[in-house]
Every structure is written in structure tokens, then in C-alpha cells.
Image 1 (cartoon, rainbow, N blue to C red):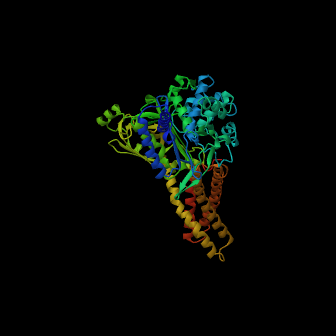
Image 2: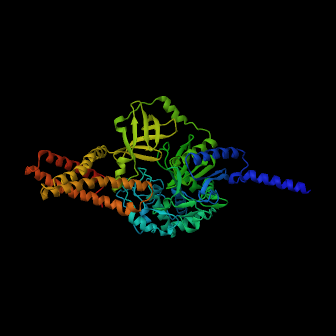
Image 3: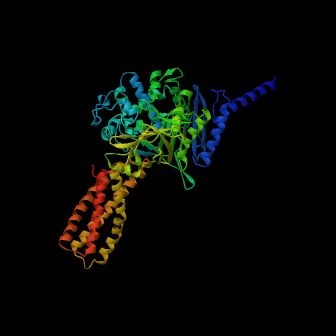
Amino acid sequence: MRIKKIMCLVLLFVTVFSLSRGGVIFAESSDKSIYTFEQMTDEYMKKILDEYNVAGAVVSVVKDGKVFFEKGYGYSDIDKKTPVDHDATAFQIASVSKLFTATAAMQMVEQGKLSLDEDVNNYLTAFKLKNPFSKPVTLRNLLTHTAGLDDRVPLYLKSTGDIFFDSLQSLEKELEKNMPPVIKEPGTFCQYNVYGMALVGYLVEEVSEKPINEYITDNILKPLGMKNSSYGLNEAILKNMTKPYRYKDGKYSESAYTLISDHPSGSICATASDMAAFMRMHLNNGEYNGVRILNENTAINMHHHQYPNDDRLTGYGLGFYETIRNGRRTIEHGGYLPSFSSKLTILPEENIGMFIAINTDSKGSGKVCNEFVDKFYDFFTTKAENVEAEALLKANVPLDMDVNEINGRYVFDGYGHTDVTKLKSVLVTCNVQCDKAGNLTFTGEGLKCNFKYIGNGFFYSKENGYYCKISEKDGRMAFSFLGSDFEKVSGSDKNLFTAAIACLPFLLLSIILMPISMIRNRKKQDTKSLIFKCILLSLSIFILTYFGLNGFVALKCMAADTLIVLKVIMPLITVVCYLSFGLSAVSAIYVVNSWVENEYLLRTRLYYSILIVAAVINLAFMYVMNGFKI
């Protein structure tokens, strides 16, 4: 009898162990394919840990209303050898947080406190959106990133656990001071905009009369049982947080967490298990374990295609964006902050969803989330064919558009039209090339896609299942693809940029030669000549400084460390532009006078004149790039 009891205990232990190997709880699923899925996931995670040098990762999968798979990989603390725990280790999920803000806003819509289609200015009291158009900005516009807002650089603060969410200024003060103006007619152009979602969070604050962090905690996190997650980095969640890492030169180094001033856009810290609850709620159309977070119709509306009008193009639901995976339209959201990448994806028609997060920036880390999402859908779905598009491809529709109007450099409209970051519009561009047979190639941002014309401005890619469209928007050609509108770079802006860059070697040469000339001729040159050379030298230095400062801004923005950018560098760029203008004006007077008075040798006057022309070209470029806007 004793032996039987022991055998029963051993069998029970083996059974439990087999159902929880690798820290995974499988109690909610008896599907044998889970072991195949785990094997596939284990193999891929070994690759990212070993080859992509990611310190730690976590995955949760939900299927048919249940948790299908949850597992942590690697370390949350390398020094202490603390493994990532799917249930206890929290990650900064960055822009995936926008789904929580959107969900909160839709709760307010259900309660009649907000309307999807009413002018948001009707809800704002402390400030109003600057909108020069007769068409109002609505909550629907904000949730689909079609409000027409200009882009702005938010404040990013680094934290090693010494500063927390409550150190940020209030959302009202942040938006009152930094809310960008509306620059395109609402509902006509898609520009992913973090301040737009921050405004959504503020609208929730206004009508609920609660800070957005408290509202989301009380009405979403707690009802879903997300006990190991929080809105914003705070002292309580810190003990559960994975360390953030950077891998460079063959070693890992601990980096910092990131706090953001536009916090409704990216402040949630969450575990994979808690994110599984959020996914289950959305896949169950607003209900989780008998608790209703959203009404069924509201949840369906959030998941439904909202923009653009032609649903052949992937675009946005209310908060979610659409992608094509294995020929099927999925809804998802990705997130990135320094050291943290994440992705949430769901396919309502198959009742499946997946969340993945990693804690490292490395050379290969940028590939991880998208690669694994593709593997996830390859595992759970078969490739769907687009019969309609395939038929149009076979019909070989003749191109009825001017390739010269199509071809050129395009920029995703994520730059400041009204501040000094407009320089990005000529620096970070994508290339679109189309031949007369209707074969179009899009290249940019590490992505290359080939399309074939199928009529009415539409092109289709057989290789990935995406449509794109070429059309005229706001007086310029626009390339609509991946839920975004890419705007064709102005020919005059491009030419002016090319001319300004061509002048830089000459200005750099003058910085080298001018001091040499001043030293060699120090005994025989008069005071007037010395002053003139000092002015020209300073002018050349300031113009080169302008480009150097903009490069610094770009690097800091990529590193999400913008305190010095906003407080010092961007105002300094404007000062440099005005100083360059003043020195150019004085120099031009000197040069004109030298020709009138026949001063200096001819070659010297020509040299000075060319220098002034180079300065004027760069001043014109500074002006077009908003360098003189205060």
C-alpha cells in the first residue's frame, strides 16, 4: 500500500512537471500542439539569446479564450543570474501602452462622456487645439492618427530607479505648453503621432475627473487582475522590473529606464501573464472572467478597420494598427523604448493573440519582435491567398500614371513641419521607383518591397500581400503603405539641401585656411582686414555648428534622451541661425565695399564672394528648415 502511494505521488509529480516545464503553465490547454509550439519558440529564443545577444525575453500566447503558452527566457538580472519569469518580471512595453489609453477612451464613449465624432475642443478647458481648418479634430481622428497634428519631440527622462513617474509634470501642463498645432486637414492624412494619443489620455482625465494613471489602474489593470503591472515606473513595480541592457563590443552593460512626458503614449510596465489577460479581454470582445471592460460592440468597433476609406490598404482601427501576416489581416501594436522592444498581435477571426518583449538593445534586437510574430502566424495559420489581387496581377493592367510624378524620395510624415526638426524631411527618406510597365519598388528603413500596378492608383505585392497606393494629397504626391502616408520630398527642398551640403567642404576649408592667413599676415594686415577675417571665420564655424547640432539632436532622439535637446540644443540652433544671418549681412557689406573700393587682390575678393554665396545658400536652407522660428 505504501509503495502504491509512493508511485502515485511520483506519477503526480511527473505529470505536474510535464505540464509546467520551462516555467510554463499549461493547465488551461490540453492541445498537444503546445509542445511543438514550445519547441519552435525555444529554438528561436536560443537564437536571439546567442546570436542577437538579447539578455532576456518573454512570450505569452492566448488561444480560444485561454492561456495557451507563457514562458520567460534568459535573464532579467545578468549579475544575479535572475531568470525572466513570465508571471513576475515586468517590462516597459512602450507604445503598446497606447492600446490601454484607447481602451480607456472607449469606456468614456460608452458612458456618453466622450463622442468619437465631436470636436475635441469642446472637451478642453485649459487649452484648445490650434486648428486652422473648418473640419474639427475628433476622438476618432486621434485614435487613427489622422488628426493632422504636427510632430513634436517629447521629453524623455532617464531613470536608474532614482526618479519615477510622479516626477513628471502634469499632463495638462505638458500639453498646454507643447501640444503641436493641426497642419493638415483632419481625416485626410495619416501621421503616427505620440502627442495625439497623449491628448486622448488627457481627454479621459477631463471627463473622468481622474488622472489617467489612476483611471487606467482602477478601470483596466485591476479588473483584469494585472497585479504585477503598473501605469508608469514607480517604487512598487521596480522590484519586479527586468534590468534594461545594451550589448556592445562583446559585452552587456546595464542602461536605464525611460520616462516620457507624453505618458499616455507609452508608460505601462507589464508582465507577459498580465498582458495575456488584456489580450483575452479583447479577443473575447471586452469581457474577461465574467468582468466586462468594454461592451461587445465597442470592442468590435476598436478592432474594425477605420482608416483609410479603402480597406484594401492596411491602416488603423481605434488604437490598433493593421498588418498582413501570412496573407491575413491582423491587428497589433508595437513598442520601443531604449533597451525595450515589444509587440502585441491578435487575430480575432482565429481567436489567437501573442505578446513578446525583450530587454536589450543590440545589433540584432530590432528584428526580434517582427520575426517572432511571423513565426507565430506561420505556426497557427495557413497562408491565405488574395484571389482578387491575383486576378488583377494576371490581367496585367497598364499603368495610367506618369512615372516621373511617382518616382522620387518620400518621407514618412513624422517630422516637425513648424520647428527645427524639419531637417529630418530631407535626411530620413524612402525611395520609390516605378517603371512604365507598372513595376514599383519601395526601399527604405531596412525594408524593400516590390509591387505591381493593378489599377486606380493601387499596386499589389505578391510577396507580402500588401497593397499600396499613389495619390495626390495636400498638393504633393503621397505613397500610402503600412497604414502610413509617405509624402514626396519637395524638389526645391531637396535641391537646396544638396547645394547647402556641397558648400560645406568650402566652409570647412575656410576654417582651416583663415587662421593660417591671419597668422602669416599678422604684421602687415590692418585692423579692418583682421576683423573681416574673424567675421568670416565665425560665420563658417556657425554654419557648420548648425549641422553639428542637428546631428546631435538626431542621435539624442534615437537614444530617447531629449532633456538637453529640448532645453538647450533646439533653442541654441535658432540662436546659431540668427548669428549666422547677422554675420552674413555684415560680411556681405564688407565684400560689396571691397569690390567698390577695389580692395585686396582679385583672387581674394573672389574667394570672399564665393564664401558669402555659400553662406547665403546655407541661410536659405536654414530658413526653409525653420531655423529662424522661435
